[in-house]
Image 1 (cartoon, one colour):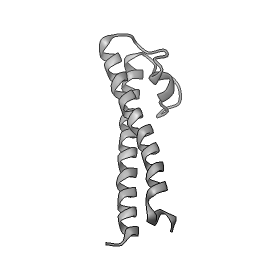
Image 2 (cartoon, one colour):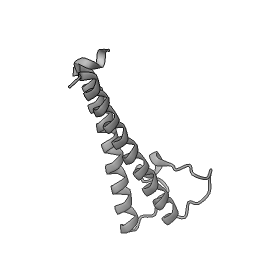
Image 3 (cartoon, rainbow, N blue to C red):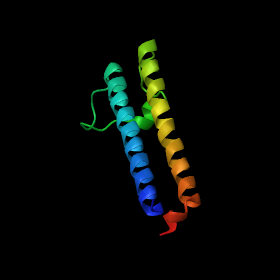
Length: 96
């Protein structure tokens, strides 16, 4: 099989996985903001970083569990970006 085809297949799968994780983290963030009474602001704009850092978030156990799930998703995205950067350095077909 052609190295370029494998490279593009892996890249497409990685991209879909990262988008799915980021969208899931955003949906969880919206749920946390709703539970915390933060319904203001621009519609559709979530505050991922402040919620991840536990700023202005309800302190009940269920909300904190949601925040933990969101942080896991964001960590997956960060690790995935780092892993993809390493993949780009070692994959021979990535050069062109």
